[in-house]
Amino acid sequence: MRLEKCWFCSSTIYPGHGIQFVRNDAKIFRFCRSKCHKNFKMKRNPRKVKWTKAYRRLHGKDMTQDTTFEFERKRNRPERYDRNVTEQTLKAIPVIVKTRHERLKKHITDRHKPGKVKSLEKDAKELEQDIGLLAKKSLVEPSTEKTKIKVKVIQQQTEDGMEE
Image (cartoon, rainbow, N blue to C red; front, side, top):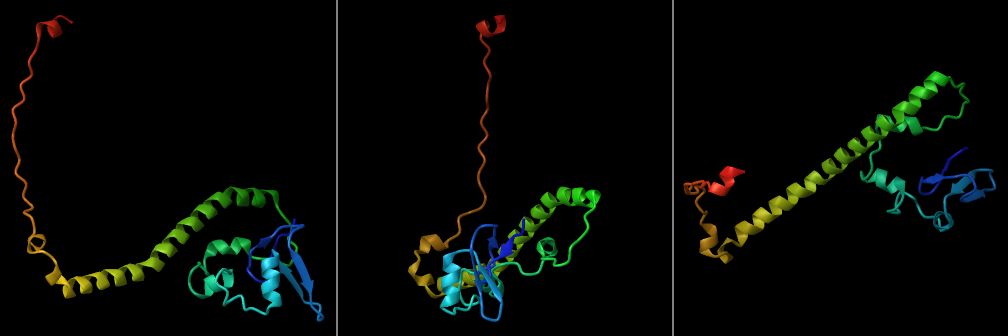
């Protein structure tokens, strides 16, 4: 089963799905859905359309370079398969998927860090400017020491409890 990639949005096209356009110079363009085909006919650039993979990669929204992508690489030459190698590969796939998800999470958190730092700086600056608007009571820090109260607990035993 051959899985193709959409020329416009880079999503996977399964057999029997999508549209194929052949230009006069015999260049083949495959599209996953009519949305991609129409955008191609309108001569839109996939790098400028926000929902495409090309845009997301170009603007740092998706991971672009990772060793786990090597397994999805298209290979044009036929390979002779060995049963042992195939078995090991199939066993390794869940580990690879897990590693990719962890790296993707780290990529997303790293991508959000600068925005969080900027928002904290902005909040601190706003607080500095408008400190006079706050009530004086809220500016005084409450004491961090908490007084502990000791309570004596006396356990009373009843005669009924003793018999059981």
